[in-house]
Length: 273
Length: 317
Image (tube, rainbow over all chains, first blue to last red; front, side):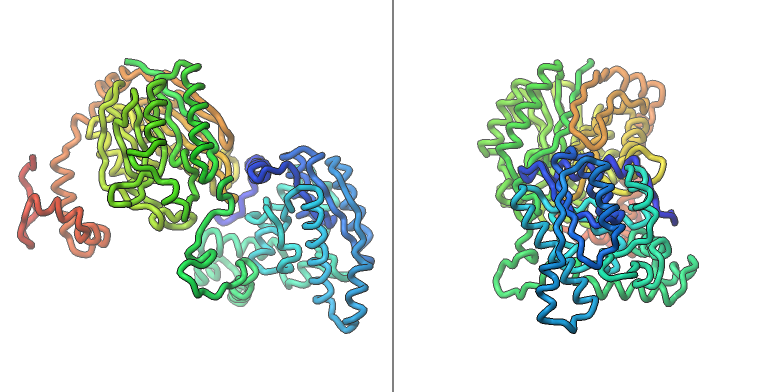
């Protein structure tokens, strides 16, 4: 009960079924995915290639000039590994052109801008190529709010959103994501030397254990402390989840009518499909 | 008597009656080809599951053209359908309807509407208040829908009412991926229930689940038929479309009940007396809540009693 299950055989079966089903019911056959060179997008791409066939997956590599050289190399490894379509688009010119007007922008602003720029490219090619944008955000980062709203968090369907990072690693290994990608230190690669765990202040394995008990198993704070987690850590994470709730919801709509979208106008996304 | 029972494990289109009616046609055709005598469709398989605000626009009254069409279809092969039924006073029910030889033989309105966690059924549906076994040309059957069976009282009533087989249309979502299991944890739980009920009540459990995804929620399939000895006689694939057929020898109900006549020995009066006592007891939240509802009061009126009267000990008939 207290450890995070990693039944990779079953996860693989469910997630490929999910991709196939949710794509086909929109009347499309293809997906577009941004490949960063990291484990999450590699896993998404491999699962999609397995579910839809490699020719139905378009990977877009969107490096910025400060991106780590390994990132592109690793993304290319994934493309070669599963034989999917790919496209390389250097986003440096459009990012630099914009920040010429705002030279004081800090690395967070720049990082967010890059994430959103990549999103606009993915959606442009979604239309051009007639494929759904495939998400790559995992449950850990979604709960912690460690992602850019309308940037890397944007997608049409996301096979990974209910998997903790710990599960991502296990599943990535099982489906054949190259070892070097699975074992490398996770980084958003938005600026030089950035690492997720350095920025967050804790490791994914630590926080996943806590999140699993807190969110999935509904442990209360005293129960989490009794299970050995420092009280401060428990409080910090609970606060992070609360403060990032806005990222997991649609924009707030001011209700004036009898029937307001998503409040009392309630339909499934797959309505009619 | 022995019949061939089929289960259509389908992936209906959410909110598209016409598409799903065609799917029903197709599966009835397949059932005929496989010489089935009866076919079970999953819960809400004529409409899809996460209907939300589309419920009123998909609801069928017993006079709807679609019902007439389904009646006609049942001349080829009797079947159990899952749909939204609208009553004359415009309540909407999550219903299972038994069609046979051009007629509706039985309607079961889901009694227990899950409204917790990922479920929201009571927001959109009215709850049924009846559990009845019914006569079919194959013998006495009962229909219970999905969550109904998570309340053991429902199968208890169905079995005591004489059902030889319980048909359970289901739309059960996969959830809880655990280690070293070929299926998710919800599937495991359901399989335990089916086996346990079949063996405990000495009847056939005919469980028809759907597959496919709606808004990211997958349905685990795995439809099955379990005999009165707790043996699985047919099993559909997990997580994908399938169509299964199996022979159901009703003689095995007799044989099992001869070996272990538990139902014969069931003391209904004891249960009724104890339940009435429990219902009157203060501090039982569920009992008090039910006692206050108008439908139960009608039952109470039939047997008027003063408060503080000691629990009934005589046999009720």
